[in-house]
Amino acid sequence: MSAAHNELPPLLPTRQDAELARTSSRLLAACIGQGPTARLRVIDGEDAIEVPVAALRMLVDILANMAEGNAISLVPIHAELTTQQAADFLGVSRPHLVGLVDKGQIPHHKVGTHRRIYFRDLMEYRKERLGQSRAALDALAQQAQELGMGY
Image 1: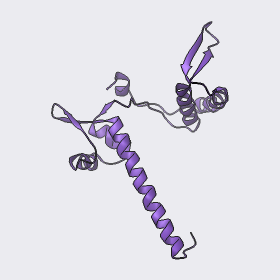
Image 2 (image 1 turned 120 degrees about the vertical axis):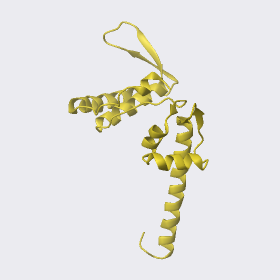
Image 3 (image 1 turned 30 degrees about the vertical axis):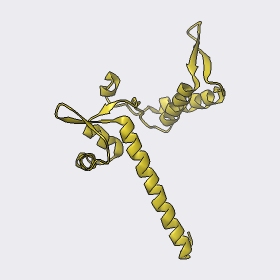
Image 4 (image 1 turned 90 degrees about the vertical axis):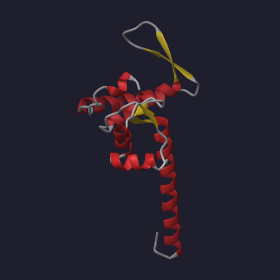
C-alpha cells in the first residue's frame, strides 16, 4: 500500500475551493482534445508539460467532485486494504465484510495473521453487485408493468 493511502483522510473543500474547482473543471474539460496526450503550460513555468489525456479527465472528475463539496481520495488499483478500509469503501460493517470474505465472495490474502483485500478485487465485487441490483430492479419494473401498476 502506498504511503499516500495511509495519510489523513481528505478534507472537505471550502466554499472558495468549490467555486474555483467548478470554474476550473469546466475550463479544463473544454480544453481536453481527442488525442492520447495534451500539452499544458503552467503560468509560473516556462516549459510545456505533456500529460496523458486520461490524467486530465481524472483531474476534471476530481475538480467536479470538489465543486459539489465532496472530499476525494485516490487509491491505486493494486493497493491492499484492511478489512476495515474495505468495509468503509463498500459502506458495510466490518463483520459483514469479513463474512463475505469467509464465504469466498471477495478474494483476500493474508499478511501475517491479517486479511488484506486488493482494491481491484473490491471494485470487481462492487461492479458485480451493482449489476445484480440493476437486473433485480429491471425485473421488478417489468413485473410492475405487466401487472399494470403504472410504472
